[in-house]
Image 1 (cartoon, rainbow, N blue to C red):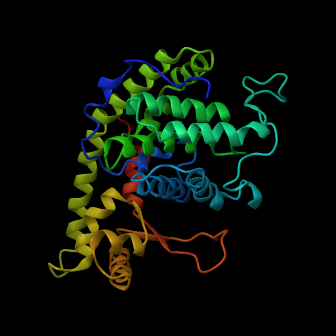
Image 2 (cartoon, rainbow, N blue to C red):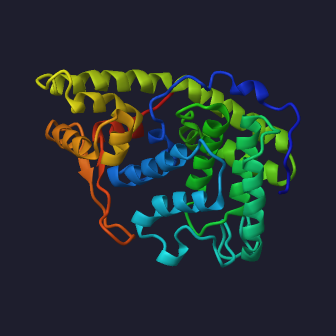
Length: 315
């Protein structure tokens, strides 16, 4: 680990982050250049997978699983590179390491550096915001995967905040990073030159601002929930589909097993409720060819909520 500690920096910024938010896993898409439902669904599923595991310490295999879930459906990486650290030298910018803007560590050092990083992520001697800032910058510096490092690194921020503070949904910091790429890249560069405090201060300010600005997204999501309720007005008061609607605001991408666990019904009842909601144009199935053996699990997406999030501007 190049740098580990920033005494007294940004600890006050954790205040205000405990307010429950809409599942801004949806806003954690980060890269808005490809806001298709499928691409967003893959990001949502990876973020949800990470946050569901925030109650325990992080392991290398957890990060590999995030990577497999995020990158597997895209087809951008060969099978052997999914959930596996890179085995070749990479670089950022330029045509080779000679003219690159940044050259990560050689592949033979990635295992040890990532083990060190995971140890730091599981520590509790530093405040959560500083920990998230340092862990993200270090992850991007190691650049352990062949592709998807930026998104996995942003997922790591959310995981740390959820793990350390108990919040269900972290602030949508990726949206704000995307709106200030210059500040983000400058902060990472200063971190790599040993200037830790400016980087932590920058990320802390983005977290605070994103937490406050997300209120507008909450309000728009609540209006959508009211509209959805009108579409199932004819269902019995105790219908499972009614109980699933609030869950969709938290989880724009769901599966029957997730619904069963969160709503407290059998998986068969959960599947039936999802089918009912699909007939009311509230959700739709998202089917992709799985890279894993066996029957793929069906994923359902709330497209109106995904569209709301991807078009959302906090400014």
